[in-house]
Length: 228
Image (spheres, rainbow, N blue to C red):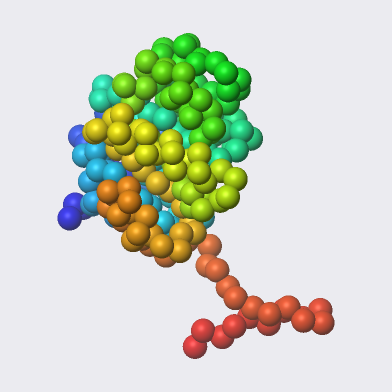
C-alpha cells in the first residue's frame, strides 16, 4: 500500500510536466477512489473497474493513467463516452487543462471514414460507435494505444449501445494484449462479475463530495430519514 494521500505523493511517479499542471490546478488532497486506484496499480498499467459515486474523482483517475502514459511515451489514450455531446464537452475540458501538453482529438463524425489524421494525436475522445467504425476501417494507429477509458461502462447493459460497446472492448483486448482498460461508473449492479470479465482490479468506494440524504416528500412537506 502506498502513501497516496496528497498530490505531492505523486511527485517522481508522474511525468514532471503533468505533475506541475496538477499542482497549478490546485489539486492537493487525493480522494479515496484515487488513492485506491493508485494502490491497485493505476500507474503501473493495471486494468481497473472504478465504481464510485458521481463527483468522487473518477475522471482524475482516468487522466492520471492516460495522460501519464502519453507523456512517458507508453502510447496513446482512447477515451470512450456514450454520447457525442459528452464527447464534445470532454474534449473542451481536457483541451483547456492539458492542450499545451499533448494533442487532443475529437472523433465523433462520419462512420464511413477512418479519420487518418488521428495518427498525429495523443488523446482521442470518441463514442463506441465511432471507435467500432475505426476498428473496422483498420485504423493503423490503434496498435499504438496504451490506455482505453470506458466512461459509463454500465451501459454495457443498454439494449441500444451495449452490444457495440461489448464488441469494441472484446476486439481491443484481442488486438492490444497489454492495453490498460479503465472502466468508470457510478452504478453497477454486478461489479465483481464485470471486473472479472475485464480481467481488471476492482475499486469500490462510497465517498461522495456532498452527503446524500434520503427523505419523503408528501403534501408540501419534506421529511428526511433519521439515520440514528
